[in-house]
Length: 352
Image (cartoon, rainbow, N blue to C red; front, side, top):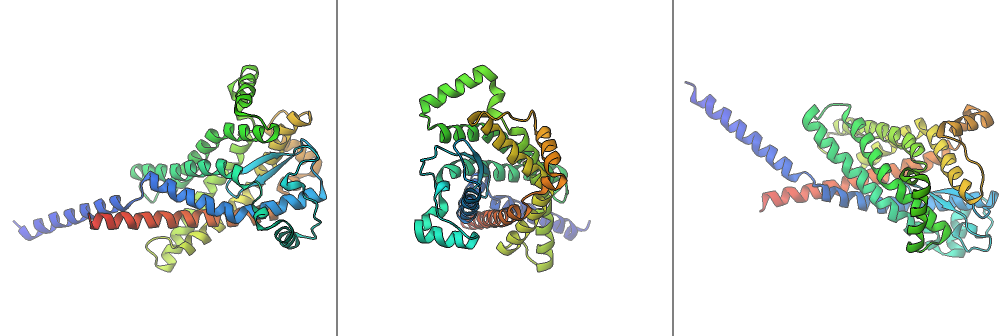
């Protein structure tokens, strides 16, 4: 009997188990993933919100917002509907400076109103964006790990399935809360009044009325998420291989995030245009009593009838200008946070 071969076999098995144990121990927990996504969400919002504040101010300059008019405001993580208040309101979107362009707007806002004005409307939207991002990214990682254990870590379908399900879940959970936030912002309701308002709405239209606009959001966000994660994982793997990196660096994550976000943004642009029309239409039907289209598809037909197919691809420049940096900043800070916790867990494992 070859004892050396038997000993070698058991030694190799023991070593493999030890490496597996260390690898599992150094993996990030769901709480650590939530903290990393939370930090990424805050940093992304801080960088991207000024771009959308300037865009909104330029829009308001060319087409003043009357009372009840709706516009979409983005923190870089999610879109929020803002409903304009009365004409004498001191709303941040109603300031009277005249801007010649984007750079001029940045300079004048900082000079006249102070640098803090570039983050106007930031706190209320961040309250919504943080839980959405935490649910989305944590669920994606947890689902990915579960699917890898069943299907194998190199299965190309894992990012598509995990990305779609995690986005579907986060949109479904947060959709009623965003509707409540918008109603509070417009009507200035107390919590007691808000409870009465929601109760009467549910009694009149049923529980599903709390998910108004959900279908148009899912129609854009789920395909976007599926394409984004599929391309991100592929780009990340390809760049790690080409650069000889064992794990994604900040640069690899940043570049992969920007590229995959741009691709997904271009392909899903028609759904983004429809979602924006649908959401603003839903609220203007309530505030300005403007009749709304029957469905998401009716909105799409209306856009095509009015502006042709090109109407579904309107605003491709501004969307890329917003989505590419937002995706790049969010994923790179998230990966950096996970890497930090992973190394922390590894050290804890080595020095108990």
